Image (cartoon, rainbow, N blue to C red; front, side, top):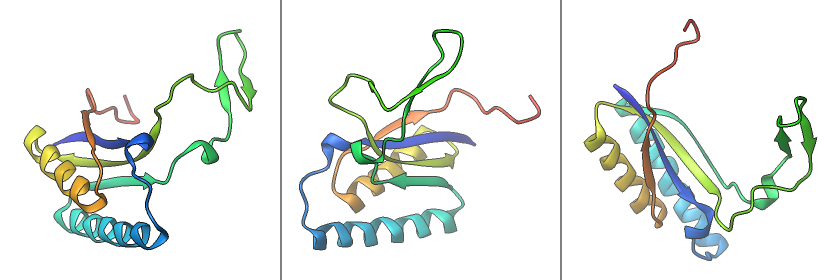
Length: 120
């Protein structure tokens, strides 16, 4: 089994009405339940945008500097994600496709390079 990150960019989310957001949320929750029953669900979260930023942390001076900004200069940032534990790329692609259909916007799939146990 391998861990995969299935994520979307906040810029990919279309403007939706409150009702549309509730419907997509219900679809996503139903899919998370299905993934849990299938034994592949590890963790997910969403609704990340500029309003959820807490701080920026910079270690480059030799000590940690916590600031309210500046943040990474980019027009794109993570909007939400799911982590799944599946057998292979094909299975990760399957679940990413299911997520894309449930929420109605594109998803990216990333394979974590290796598992790191706390005892490593």
